Image 1: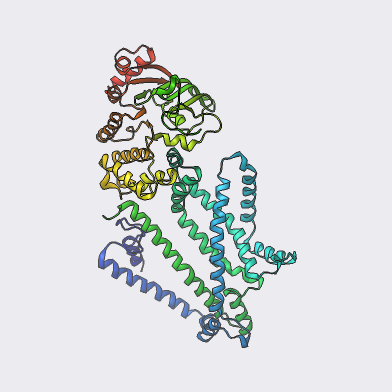
Image 2 (image 1 turned 30 degrees about the vertical axis):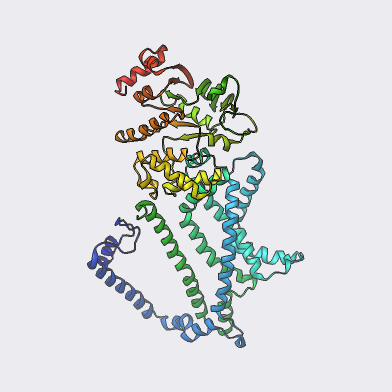
Length: 300
Length: 261
């Protein structure tokens, strides 16, 4: 099996330079395909055997992978006192989308403030630095608890009577804006000063030069780390469950404490995977398309 | 500043497109420009020569307002452009600059590079900007490259695109900052040809260059800079054949020794 893995490594090196960019499997033709298929089957079979032959296998299968519980927790049953995880994940998706849009905008604003040079903006720069230090230093869960329990306790008209998910999104935005603004800042720093100089020398204003020349290049450079943060954000929407919002993880928790079976968490895990994996592949495609367009030119 | 348009000035300087008076500039303790005074008459070409670090590039960047000056004044087309209350963007539309390292925008194709400033800075309608850009690209033999991205072009092509990009905002003065220094030797000629054509059209140009024979051909005056000061300012024949200052002589001797003149 070691031989098989080795040949997979050499034939399918993720960065083998066939001019088509990173691929899981490239070069070597049919033989490589056969070898990699066989080695994949062998590895999966070994893992499955290891799991099935373990002394506690049948209990684990019953507790985490019971078909009946998987299905019941997925569709939910209000009469039995538990919610559908399949419906609850929709709340995660909505929280993620709302938070993502806000984070992208606010983090950009924060990054632009922090890298500005104007003396007028000095106080804002200091505030920006304090903000990033604070929210990167405090665990997201604590921010969620502080916002979700603190704001309602203030009894402010309008602000204090929102659904838990709204406080959850607000807390996620506060926390992630700090991280993502640093990613933006790194991206802005990765674009050479001469690009800004060239744009300004053509009579473009600072704002226009940033918008059309610096930012597009900065964003291309930071798509992978940005995606990383967003995958992490998708998962962290599960933390909002501590406020009582019925999102996937909370629904799974309720199922398991009602029925005493953990298969509901397996369902939640699978649903989160279904969300994150397409996002990762989509980003790979964006990067690849951009790379091809720039290096290969445009077909006439 | 009302406008950096032509004929806006009056008095003895009206015929000078660019006038520098007592310009000084330091980067920290390093004095890069010392009391520079220089006038560039309209429709003439002046070349700046001198060793690397002599202040040629900084001088050009100051005229384009990419670097602030510490003292002195700069006027363009009769308008003072240094000091408070100057619209930098207006000045930069009148004064184009091309850099040694091209600085094309790598995420845009050739046409997008050329039309960005006309559309976003001048407010030219896109269709008109594209038509003008194509005219310029055709004129400099680049029309077939309009959909290419910069990293698919040779250095010479990139530099020609950079010149076209600067011309697209219709500047009245062009500053060329060692535009051939980053090029492979066989690509230098095509770029110099473009500059010759601009000069023939009457473009006012201030050119920092290491191409001595080119400077001798094209310039109406050549200035030799050393340590941030203009040491000698004379017609090319005079400066290259009978330099008066000892530093100019030494510089030209080293250039000849290197086979560059």
